[in-house]
Length: 356
View 1 (cartoon, rainbow, N blue to C red):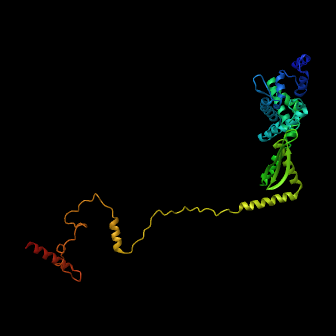
View 2 (cartoon, rainbow, N blue to C red; view 1 turned 90 degrees about the vertical axis):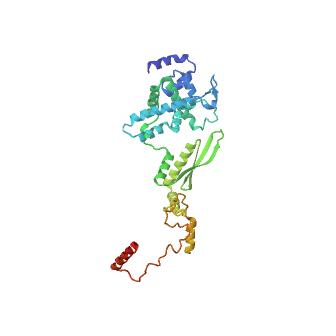
View 3 (cartoon, rainbow, N blue to C red; view 1 turned 30 degrees about the vertical axis):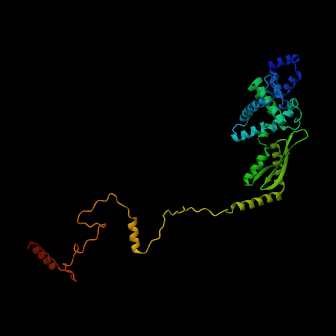
């Protein structure tokens, strides 16, 4: 025993609330220095007390602190105990130790639950009351003695005397995760349906869940929390899957029917070719040439920069030339092509005629 514990034991007869000091010593392994932290840790929110400033006085804030400290302490212990193990294994082991169900059992075994002050209405069946008080107690230890005291409490009082860390690490207790994992491996649909929510004679809430496997209603579980109800329903469903071959046959038959329906095409696959949209306005093409010429003349664009044609070149818009201007009567037309001699003779005759 350390010197400080000896001094605290000597002072104990002169202190108020000696029974609380002794009870806490049996639980945490040392005497509290500031008893107010522990008194608050043991005060359930149902008491509805307030301090001098009017703020609620209960263990919820210490519970928040203790939860964080507990994660750090247990993570430290698990990390050093399982050397070489991977992150997933360490995380799973820590989760099993700090989960509310485990902490609730520890609180009951250590006597913490008996020290909690509550209005008594939800005391007997509230599975969170003990676990919350345990976390709040760790928060009180942290504020009273520091991190090392929390480590000492968990190593010497919890993991050495109450929990076998190796058994916890290699034991699967999460039946819901186990059932979901089985469904994923076999591609079986698992659902959890809330079938009832009520209160018992003391006002504590109760939940009832049923597992549905591939549309087949399976087992039912009830509890004072949703998690507890789902865990029980999952455990019973796993037991039924192991013991009843007919149930497994029905599950996989339903799975086969579902997958067949999913494989059937709902509609024809869409066409990958782009849709051709005709942006051209089609017109009826006239067969009469005169109407084609008239349509072209009507639709011809007007050239406002058109220059006048040079003299001697007839304009299409002018009146037709007279017959005298285009008189070809003096040109002799032969039925056969002229020879080279004829062309030369005709050229010489024309030349002599111009000189006369």
